[in-house]
Length: 237
Ligand SMILES: Nc1ncnc2c1ncn2[C@@H]1O[C@H](COP(=O)(O)OP(=O)(O)OP(=O)(O)O)[C@@H](O)[C@H]1O
Ligand SMILES: [Mg+2]
Image 1 (cartoon, rainbow, N blue to C red):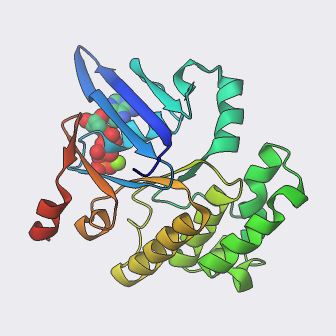
Image 2 (cartoon, protein in one colour):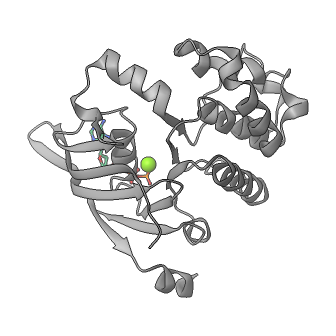
């Protein structure tokens, strides 16, 4: 049997929001794990808790209870400073909106995470070349975000998320703001680059044809996470 190492193990995550006298349970005892190099898609209706769960997994938000272990380290128990450093070294995040710094060129934006963790040029140079070639942005590096198309901006955001060679890449509707043609192209490049670098990819998506490309599909239903039979999903598309 092939030996597969667990990258991320999420157990019993609960996240509640209090609104006046009511409590919304956005995530209700969610558990899942993903192996090295695996692409896991999370689908589900709007408001079902997908982003909340992803943000908790990526250490952007804290759960009421439950654990998120990345290679055995429970990130929910780290202090804010420890978490920031851990995130910089081990996690990459891509959002629906690219969130690039408008005054910085594509190149400067991509290198921001290396500055945050004081990474030496020699430590990322090789990886940088691979990433920008794979994402097809070599000739756009000296442009400002405003001088790039939506698809190119998103490719720069993906490069920024991958520059520190994270163990796991989180993506929340990464192509949600692009038209179909651009979305398909960016997604192809994202998956190609993820396979090239061997990252674990956890992606939230509304798009069933994207989910069908994943190794495994999970579904959020009112905060409850369950596994989806991919064969059945394929038949529904
Ligand atoms: N900061 C917050 N304060 C209060 N309630 C929140 C907060 N963030 C999310 N919620 C609630 O938690 C639930 C899950 O929201 P979430 O954004 O995770 O859904 P989603 O599945 O990502 O939806 P979409 O597909 O529209 O992005 C919703 O009922 C939402 O209103
Ligand atoms: Mg969302």
